[in-house]
Amino acid sequence: MAKLTPDAQPTNQTSSGGSGMADYSEAAETAAQGGSRNELDPKISKAAIKHAKFAISALDYDDRATAIKNLQEALKLLTT
Image (cartoon, rainbow, N blue to C red; front, side, top):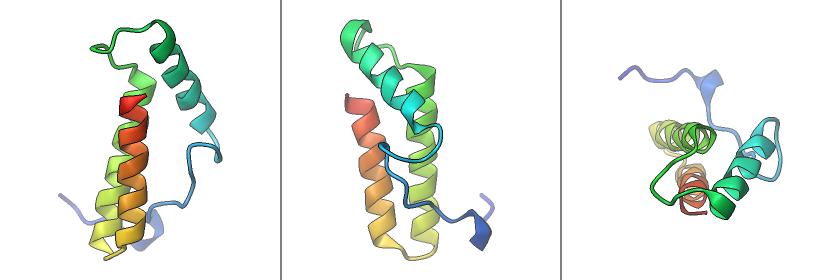
């Protein structure tokens, strides 16, 4: 796996802010209301993968706090 460049570091955005994140929140609400727990909405999956990748990148830079934050965001998306 190639190491990410410094300009590709994780962001400090949370799911309540930042562009595009509202789409993931809406998808999570829709899935929680009527979707099966076994089916994963592609938007939620994409967002969780993004946060997991950011966490890995943060660990490459020894940024523990950002790694934890992004892993928590990924878990939050997957468990709601």
